[in-house]
Image (cartoon, rainbow, N blue to C red; front, side, top):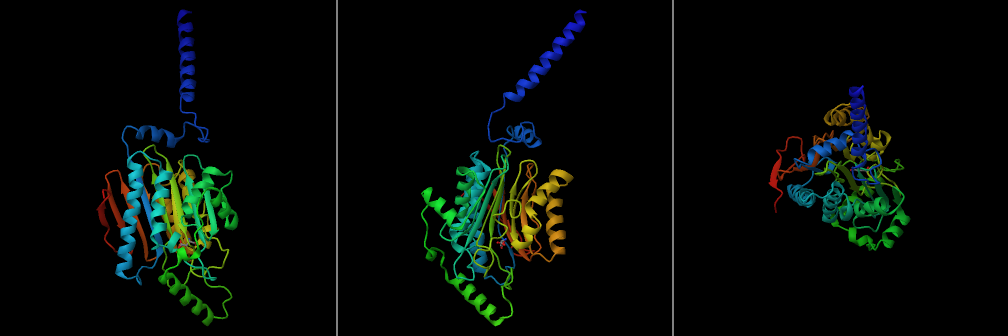
Length: 371
Ligand code: ASP
């Protein structure tokens, strides 16, 4: 009898301990998807061995017509951008902060199709799109078709943080920016000779082809520079972000995949973080970023396999050009692209930044994250 009573006491103590351990975890209201997820267990394990990963891209396309100088400038800027993200992650900062900081540097450079360097619409001004997503909470923010915002990724972050919405577009997004103290810049902020010439050439080509009512989604020069980043921080949380001026000679009001959560940008601690680049219309139709992550989540395939299957099989079968950077909670990275190039850079806790991808056979350039 005594033995039975002792056993029941043990059972009761065990149940109470299990319940208590659940409730003793930090009560972060934003962690809406349960406390005992696979990703959280991995995050717990990681606390003893800090590690982190940051991957950035500078657009899929054809770099072959770019001058060596332009490629070098882009590569140097990507290194600078990754250093900004590395500085945050190495101090224990969040993946969301690192993604925003990395993308902001590329937006400011004027060298990529994002922020200051955004491609022009057929009306001759850039319209910018951006999105950011937090894989821990599934919180997301995005902006589209903004014309006076120097750093759309920052505005997307504010949409995520300060509003009950996920996406704001055009005038409404810019009104919100003003309310947050963001200065609206004039269209001249985005002016540069290279983009103006590209616009004029594209305009001429469209005139020569009067039968085409609308320009192709992906112009002939196939040169692109959408930027994006994915990161895994020391707490084991994923984030993704993308920023773009879209495609050359797009129609005013056209919105691509980059700011559409699940199409060009997605992050979920349960599966992976993805930023895409390519013909946005296909990325939207195929919900590329979410498809990759859901294959990881439901089919239990590796992030490499999921990303390869979507980019190199599904998209190729539809003649859809592009690529992605993808990162899982274990730090595995995939960067498939079906174009001739996609500049990518990556860094881990060892502080070695490796940049590659301006051609399929380009040897990676490795530099230190320490400036
Ligand atoms: N995906 C972008 C868009 O369609 C363009 C790009 O990545 O080059 O807006």
